[in-house]
Length: 382
Image (cartoon, rainbow, N blue to C red; front, side):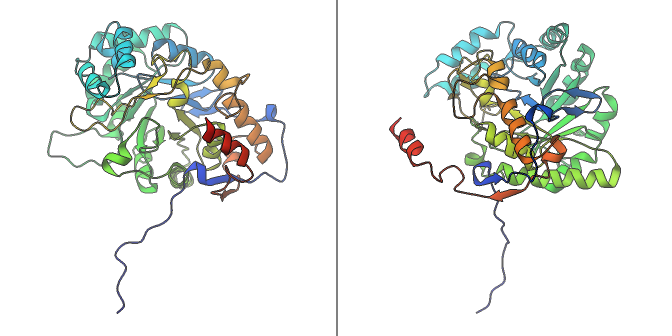
């Protein structure tokens, strides 16, 4: 008996399942332009550091800014709950795996101190670098005016999933079109993974979109609530929305692929899939400058009722400058990310990021195993 199809499914791809096809011409890596523009702000490198407490504090934000990138400070994290967050960070680092979730829930129950918001922003601005901060949608209306008054340059409104249309029985919620008009700074919103959600967000007038739900090394959203799209497909879908929106309006809104990166190869694939920039968490949590002491956890990890993350041990592997620019002391692609991007662009014949978007991408599930028997054996031995 014939039956109707209940639901159609398509295959979605992660970075480990795809590969880039070299171009018909090659370019010297040092002649590539990898700059990023967000509204009126320009950055030499298209790399952001995630708004996670184990990754970004004031010192890290300053160091990242001086190296040409952008670090986002979590205004609802430990930096604004404690005048001296170092003691709390040490406690999290020392907690046993069995007790760490309870410890995180306890330390994050401390109220946010509004005076610390201004203090942290001022410290970053006084160092002469661009200051970007993150808030969740629930607290944006209350805290964004304080952040703007303190002198931020970029506001990131971020949660596990953020849409332009939210249905609720509660008070009148956050409306991004109004927020953009009220604030004198660019607004980046995330996270999303679909064409329609990305397009709807862009139509509110925001200045950038974060792409990715659940791919982070410390995130367990996909396991807890079953939601997410592998990053290669999510990036391509949102890039299609960006390009269609640009053709319709003449306004280019960059998309920033957030999470799921293990090495420079993944980073290069994200740009070929359509990203204008990438946001990294665990990679930067491994740097000497990161406040997590070799530990990493997500913004949803300390949720009081349904934590969607875990603290992971990533170890400290090198300096921030080494991670971004080398020289590298490892062969796994986790250092000199800028060099990897420039080299990949040169091999693919892309002079700038928009040309990198045109690079051919193929489905290649054996890209990391073909001919690598000895590397795989050595990896198993370790």
